[in-house]
Length: 202
Image (cartoon, rainbow, N blue to C red):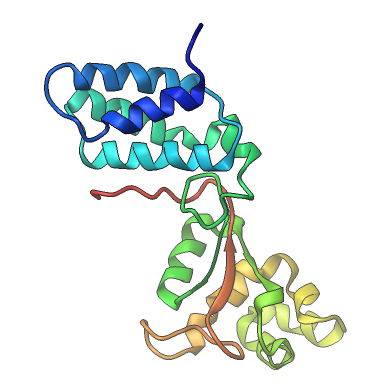
């Protein structure tokens, strides 16, 4: 009878810090099986990712390193990850959302690369009414007439312009390194799936 995914994971974890002899070969064999396995719980998916991160930082050899990096590159495509992605929010695993109040330089960097995956976390946004007066400063010149004529709450008026306008607020804030503010606190931003990989050693 073939060992279960849980058993395979436990075996790989138990020898992760063992080096020399046949350990490298055995680790590669277990990772091959784990790459095809499907886990039932979010905790097991997280454990596999942590195992891969450790082996990425401390591989037995170049062959194992290549195998680990290949698994990390495709980790967001795992079916078990997709099934548990909400439970794994803020874990830093590729394919899961991140909720965080980013500082201005980071927010700008994220917008430039993954702007289509960012949204404002409105329930966490303080003093939303004060944003009403700031909208003209955050919009392009050609957009200001629409802001004057359309009577809607900021969330609706910004619509798809959130990433291009609201997160561009750094232009009217203090120098880099200070918090982006529109009301109180940092930008409460939700970073969508498949955009961040947490890897030690880099």
